[in-house]
Length: 300
Image 1 (cartoon, rainbow, N blue to C red):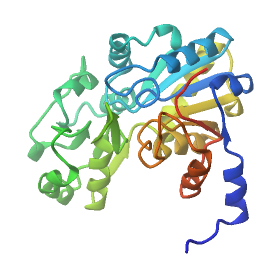
Image 2: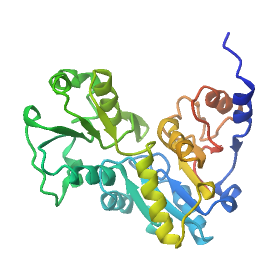
Image 3: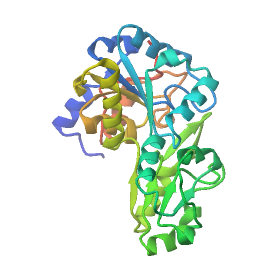
């Protein structure tokens, strides 16, 4: 028999609202920080209801900053959104873990680097005089993902990591996500490699959610757009991942709207895109961070 939840935990669970749409919450916030992959699209197709909801929020005077753990700069992710059919009217700006990684690389241009990740992530370094070297000569590693995320697992990298850990080469993780959904299939991300690297004794620095720097940058951009600082009490973070989106919101003291049809869909046993509130409450009871509100798919 499982241990009962303490009263404080029961109160936190009870406070999670199950809402039919963003319109039920919108008046309480000036700014939305929205996740991208898992909320606006699933890697293969866009969710029309999601970008419609964000567009309506903006038309009512709100500001939308997309925060993505994509290991590519914001303009590159914007191009992907264009191709998927997400209109630019749905958001004001975008901050990515790739942007934050690029800032970190700029501060270390004198040091040779080894890039671990697919060719599609190379825009992180575009225009920078970076000196790439073989892994044996690198002062540090930028990890943006697995070489082949459809076939490999983190365990395939243990042998490569052993000599790096032995000489204390630090890793910059350009995507803290552990997994991401691609058309209904979960694939490993750079975060899974960084976790393994730390377990083996290495040092890893994470550039995106749930860590504070990406939120500080998003708050700064929202302030520039709105012309004044935005209190976190007027910010709603939207995302599908407890570990990154919901934890990140909790870390800055913002409210969070959880989207169930994402990486936790199987755990929540979503049927016909319907979220069972009682089942979801039991799921939230087991999590270190709980959302303010929840719904199956982002809609207005």
